[in-house]
Image (cartoon, rainbow, N blue to C red):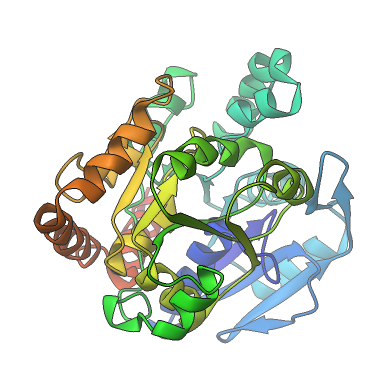
Length: 370
């Protein structure tokens, strides 16, 4: 198959969407498919054999990390040369509209996928009154597609409830070779804990944005004796967070990737994830693959990953004591903690990227067959 992929975000940006796309492109190319990627320019022209067509972009005012690329005529010229069998638009917003236009105007089968819960993000940036309008815009875009894919059952249900049609589940995936309990090193634990490796080490990994509600970790840190917190990642909210956590033993590590990120997960005692806006929460799967027990909000796609008390703990995000109690439970019983780690790894091993991409190819063939 020849697949033209339109995405609003790609390398060098680091987030869960980019991680999924990287592994998907690698698997598709490895299995003989040919992929052309349209995305905001990031300085790369190819990835794993796929051509990357980067377009000049400007930063989104409320979220400078996110760059918007406007559609332009050369997209049509590139598509004419590539002759795609299918177009896949990822989080169609601006650039994705070009993918929808060319699919419809040239009779090319169209698949769309939903990865970022933008309507809920609005509430964290003072724009909650626009949620209804945004759902209508999303419905108008997604209902152009022959198939709409979500990465959790909760998001499948959410999209259907807002009138988006032909919705199905694109299964989760995680790199269980890179993320492994054996990656833990004394050096990484010493680094993350700011030289206090014998203390309990809490970890957050992800984008530092207001919608992630990272402030909710501070009361947990205060309730666990001799605890240290490492925050891995970057984003527009970092300066505010550094001020908010200034009186706590918190280490803002910045971005980590590859084996260093895997070592961070494996070295930590608990992964804390308070976000309520996740369509899936890929970092949770990475933590679980590394044998790091996760404590996360019972919201969005997260319950698809974590079975409370079996491979992690879920807490009610409306309960101010919920996350504290869950973390205290984790540390109260060392034997149960060890079993939790083993169960987390077992769950992650069920979800390799090859299987997730094979499922995606089946969806593609289904759409082409129709």
